[in-house]
Amino acid sequence: MFTGLVQSLGNVVAVAEQPPGRRLTIEPLAPLDSVALDGVALGGSVAINGCCLTAVEVAAGRWSFEAGPETLRRTNLGRLAPGSRVNLERSLAVGDSLGGHFVTGHIDGVGRLAARDDQGDWTTLWFSHPAELACQMASKGSIAVDGVSLTLVEVEAERFSVALIPHTLANTTLGRLAVGDEVNLETDVLAKYVQRLVQSGR
Image 1 (cartoon, rainbow, N blue to C red):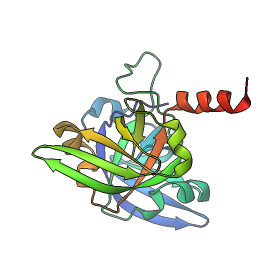
Image 2: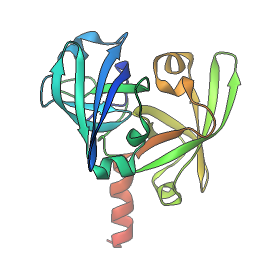
Image 3: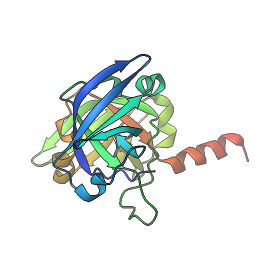
């Protein structure tokens, strides 16, 4: 379980194909919370662009992760290459502060940046999304975009908007996005259970 509060940007230093999956090696860059990140051990869980992966090797300030075919199919991790920047967050420990919202690290779909409106140091981003996710979104509700906990501003049938503050733009990958770039989307886990309950008719 995660919060959607990014603790560090990371740099992909190596990608090794391991059919049918691949191995990613990542090093943190200028961590916002170095104490939390230093505590990641072998077998620990880290959200990479919001996708929960297990550390299979920890050495020299770098972590290696293995992503299987399902993960590569349902996320943007298959498009990562050496030099790519990613958002990093280690899993919650019991008693940690929950500053964002409950994020499971299980990606629901891939969206694309459809438009961005930069107003000085502030930005409004519009993302397209798979149509089936629309019923799990509501204005002022929560969504994780590449692992970043955000508040939905407007929600339409095939797109939604979020407003980003300067801190988020500077300390996550979202500030670097260009129109057409892919992002991982995870809707609010509570919305999923509400949808399931409504569909069951109980």
